[in-house]
Image (cartoon, rainbow, N blue to C red; front, top):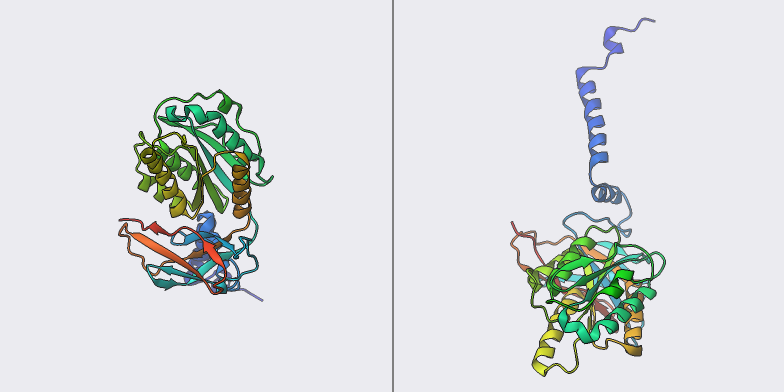
Length: 319
């Protein structure tokens, strides 16, 4: 049987269709991983985890009962998210125990002269509680911010940290900003910033608002430990504590008032346990206006006897 030239060669339409399909496959392979994961997730069951795209607001949520115990086995139906009072559809829900990345910020400014040994000991205590799969990076900050070790597993404070002397001013905001930007590049879904400082910022080029917004954008929870001198006058100490509480409260973290002893050990143990027992929720805001305004987040539970803690908002992109 003879095959005509018409049968042997695809029509121009089929050739274009084939080329288009090939081009589409190539483009999909070249797209960023989160987008590819999102496309795959659309084919999954609605109750499964929907992967992140650039419009998703992600919340790491801690749920406890009246006795302070962590609550597990909740589903997405147990949560309701409101943004500026408007209900939002939950499109990301995850409860698996996953590794986290932590940035430890060690204040080595002149005002910490009498507290340096205590601050180093606090950093060591936190590192000792890490699991094998968790990673941490240690920074020190005074007039400028320096990264002493890259993100890696391990429970040892970098040797250089023991040679640091207290000197210079306090660039707390710049340190939080730097840690947030570095954490935003990490693959871990859960991220934390641990601040060991007296809170008295007097050097940063970045404002507290800018640093906080960067942390929220990186989905990093901030935990602050008050290292201020108890002999400080009341006004100065309250101002320092207020700076630390701003970061922890706005990001859904915790403020620790005891810089040493059993109280600090217990606080770090609770923080590490908390980071390992969080729900991850996300939604795509109904309000897509890029106006740079603050969006207030309220998280409700269907079970009133439980308490949920997460960040209380974020700033919308501008432009």
